[in-house]
Amino acid sequence: MTFARMAPGPTVDAPTLLLLHGWTATADLNWYQTYAALAKHFNVLALDHRGHGHGIRSKVPFRLEDCADDAAELVELLKLDRVLPVGYSMGGAVAQLFWRQHRQLTSGLVLCSTAPYFAGSRQEKVGFLGMTGLAALARATPAKARAWLTDQIYLQRKTESWDPWMMDEVSQNDWTTVLQAGIALGQFDSREWLSEIDVPVSVVITMFDDVVATRRQIRLFEGIRHAEAFRVDGGHDACVAKPHLFSPALIRACNSVLERAA
Image 1 (cartoon, rainbow, N blue to C red):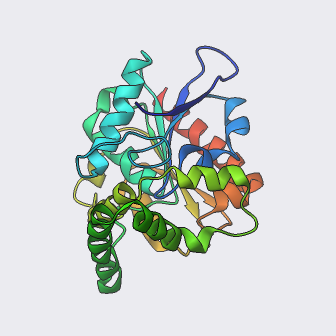
Image 2 (cartoon, rainbow, N blue to C red):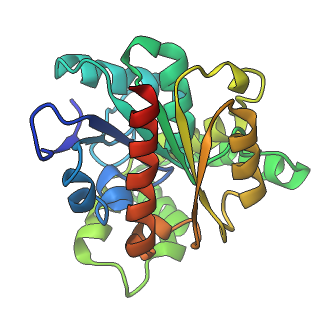
């Protein structure tokens, strides 16, 4: 069982966007500020990744490749022809893998606030490796200790600005799997095959991003032939914090891909 959000577009035959959310978030947490704007132009489909929100629960260790396969199975289950994957942060890595593993379902790619790799410096690699121990701890501890671990990891995001539904979304996360996802994200690197992407691509670059460095987002853009870039003057949370800037840029990026694909 899994969870998907669907928002019908202006017409039945409007292009379908496949929204792929970032690490530790859910489809709704990542995209709720953009659903209405996108649905004026496109059919919208969004799912929770494994271990996130109401996503698939599995004893198999988390792999980004499996997230791409999950999304493809959802597309096929709904009998959709081809979709436009729109990936945010970790979802951008899933989108790249979606193209690589399911080229026949991919009309193009829109990659937002993301990169071809996420752990470059020694400090970053050590940080991602540290999650291995946390993942093991999450597997080993009983329910109360696991709940404490959840609170500690997400404590920095528990602010007064969060609505109750947001906290409920976060509480659905399976932190064992989410921690494994962090490890997988640290190991992701598409630089060897990035230039092979043969569908139209738009890259939405968040110019003041302190999570996924802007220079890495630019490197992603430069590594894909004929990609187009769209700038958003915001940080890594621009999709939620600055929807008045992010949503129009995202719509332009999607239309650019669809026009080139046609």
